[in-house]
Amino acid sequence: MATWEKFATEAPDLAGVVRERFQAFRHHVLATVRHDGAPRVSGTEVSWWGADLTIGSMPGARKALDLRRDGRFALHVNPGDGSMDGGGDVKVSGRAVEVVGAEQLPGEPEEVDRHISLAFSTTEGPAIFAVATLSSTDVDPTTAKTGSVSLVRLSRDHSCSEWETVAQVPLGA
Image 1: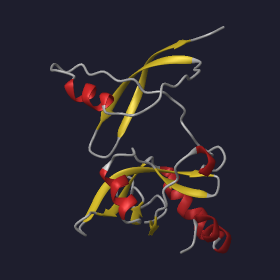
Image 2: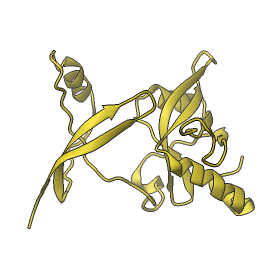
Image 3: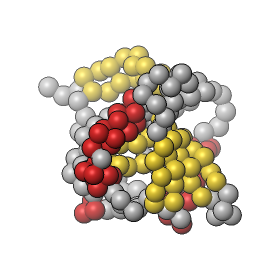
Image 4: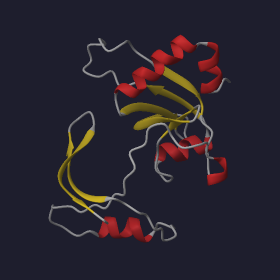
């Protein structure tokens, strides 16, 4: 099976169109194979790390567990407003390979939205689910330097999530 790099070398015009379609929208549709052989369809983000096409996922997400067990996948580009005027339909399929550890990561990604997420909810009720999730996470403490802190409002519709910056406070000198 060809890597993205090999595909881009052998069919640069087509690879350029496919990449452009994936970069036109943030969220796409990923199909994986469940443990019982049925398909699972999930939303995902894609990006390029060096010459590699990557699929975004939290480590314990069902789609990640599916891909660890059976790497077969199909990835369908977000069709936008449904008119297909944005350059056509694109689907990519293959076998995913998990990349774990800094020594396996390629160079710095071409496009990355560096941020640290801290969340709270304004809905009433216990935060037991957030506490349980954080308590079960086995992550070593990390130090990160940042130039500002932003308060954002998350908006969700039926196709994607977006945030709006409400306030921003610069940090440091």
